[in-house]
Image 1 (cartoon, one colour):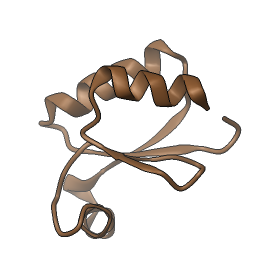
Image 2 (spheres, rainbow, N blue to C red):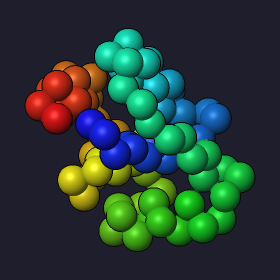
Image 3 (cartoon, one colour):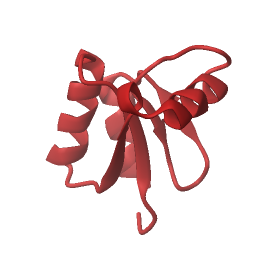
Length: 81
């Protein structure tokens, strides 16, 4: 993927830690935005998730979004790109 993936996270989210490990292990570049410290980012996550503040929310260059993906679903998406 030549364009960047954006991952919205928080410091306290175990699913975020897991998603970052998956991305790092596959050497996939991404931009992490911590919504705990960014009001605009938190509002974006709420918009993307129909009113829920769910993380990780991962936005891909093709416009697709994954929220709290399982490890296998995330790996499959990253390998398909």
